[in-house]
Length: 226
Image (cartoon, rainbow, N blue to C red):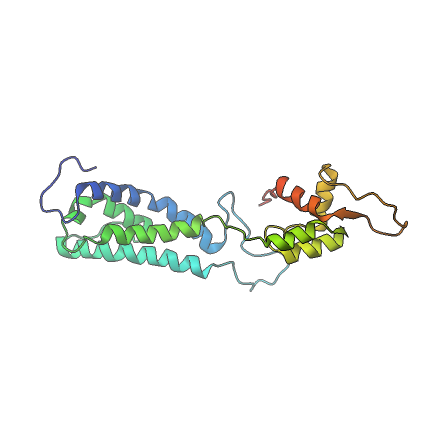
């Protein structure tokens, strides 16, 4: 995009090239960000209203994602305005965030020759990084109380007791449910502790075996039906 190195640049050519790549990725990022704002999944359109509720039910909406989206848009607007004012250019692109990014990418030389744009690359990169954190949040690290888990592992409880205990242990054991334990049993990952039990007593499991199986045996993700 930048064949020769023009003179009078306030931004180095190498930085402009990096900025071109950054701007080129904004249209796709904006689509993902809009999905995060409205709660849509990229794998398919969703029903924006939940079934069985009144027509005035509010639509899903993420205030945090909306703020990040609006900040990215405002950041691009401010730099486009500066370029147009100082270079005496008429803005002819779309007023959307993607349109602003495309216009800046197509006018990189004028952008680089505009006084006061030295901080633009860092400013735009920060806004893009904030949007990327919304679209692809960092992986959550779980903190497990080792002593509590060690004590729980030795217990023998029925299914309901294990589910209650798992909730108290916190992540990643909160997803241990009655159905989850049944799934693990059906898959041969856990077995009840041998009796003898009274006929009306519920089966008991060694908690440690259930917790280990829960972590080792992947949960099946539900497929979207929309």
